Image 1 (cartoon, helix red, strand yellow):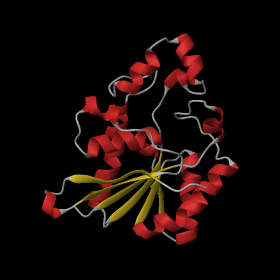
Image 2: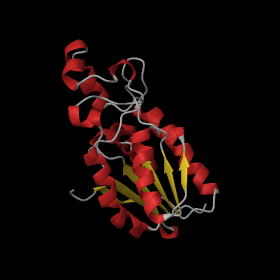
Image 3: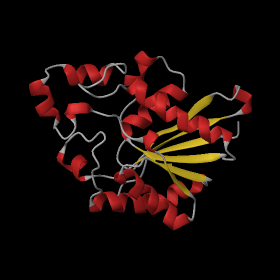
Length: 204
């Protein structure tokens, strides 16, 4: 095992974020605010000195990651396993629309990580596919990896890596646009992952 640090970086603001619509696997574009958020974050994230950036294939994550890799020269890898949660038929809808058509279902999904939207996937399923990426990186010669992905995925993967009970995953707060979470593992802790930063970021 070579991987010692993971930086989970959420993409910048999108047009869907700005209008309060659920994205999931929909390929929303960054707003100008989102592009600027990514640019402002580069100098701070560069201090983590990642060996590799792995990004979701959804363009909001790929574009955010490219801002960093173009500025730093760090290699970029694209992996569709880092896509956001598939929200099924909720994708493209607002919270109000969902609550009107499926009363109570969105709240159940928010509090139960085994629950999935109609036609979608649960956070447990999302964490399992994201963890495959981490396991692959562990077999590569990578010490610090930055995963540029999505808020729901980052929260689920954090809960999984920290070995939290699934019932407790919902206690982890959301991650803001272009904010990041950092986990590290050390020999002295039996190579278990530890949370160093959560939802860290800058205003801009």
